[in-house]
Length: 442
Ligand code: MN
Ligand code: MN
Image 1 (cartoon, rainbow, N blue to C red):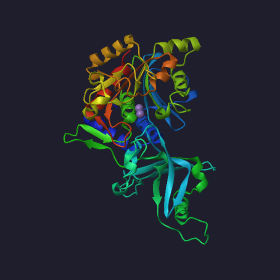
Image 2: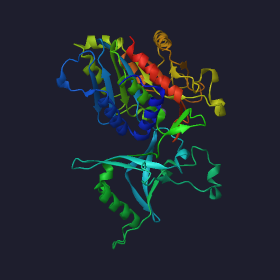
Image 3: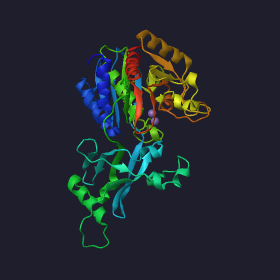
Image 4: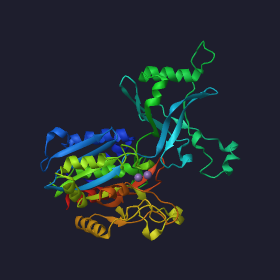
């Protein structure tokens, strides 16, 4: 694979975010693309890796990493991004019927504005794991012939009382249940709910699962349909999950399309669970990340590993809020990322007293400026929002624990965490160019 031009990158990106709507689907897609680009899955038995070798790693179907061993295997240039996105998850005992309507009970994942998720077409993706070891894939709502799902909202004619509540209260978390069926099944048993029985029979016939199997299911409810261009000028991409799959995709493609042998070992790490605090075995706090670095760098002892880490560099790539003139009050305009301003870098993230931020060293920031300038990349520096209006962390603070120099980088977007996020095509392309320049330089 060679350097990708902007038109092809954007086309591939639209396909990626239209297909990879969950962490698992992102990992599947990343693996498919990596294999096409000549990467092979890493095996412990494969011995010392030689310069130019291309390997990939998977962890529990929700993490992916791909590395190219550089001319010198004494440090790593790493691109990191997260592949989870805010959504609505199906509860473990989800199915119930109320007055002739069957619902899946849900709990939302990550920070959402709940009202944005009602009356919008939704799809369900995930797996149902059975005790005989099967993992049944579920994907319904994307094909034009598939049904979609919906979370209902009260009509304006009857919501006088509700409309008086605060926006954060008028859709209660327990009201985000999706309507799944209304067809009744004939049953002799008077105690059995007839619509619920229909759903159970459907699940049995279509997926071969019983109600109790839903306890070990992971079903994610996400906006249905493909990403597409937005605006008369087609300057924007509208789609779900661009936080942070826009950085995951551009980082991945920077590694997969790298032509020259990088100076040091270079790669991309895609993690899960950022939206709920980077916890769990598949989040950035997991030792998996460190294990991958050990496998690739092969230090002879702890002292050597510590030396390699100390000279390694990372761009922790995540989206930031693009300045929105309609909500100017929330931003410090001069310090905010602009749409079409290029890849943005943040010294710190998080609000208030920089809590949750990485606060990168100025020496490292100056180095990044030089790399971007030399490569002709369009870039900007920003911080997200006004100091005391809010904030948010990224995976950078986790990576800092390994004593790696890390700087937040990414693409500015509008409508973050909504079912329809917007990103500028030029920013997406400059992110790809910036990541490419970063991994090949040392
Ligand atoms: Mn993010
Ligand atoms: Mn986010």
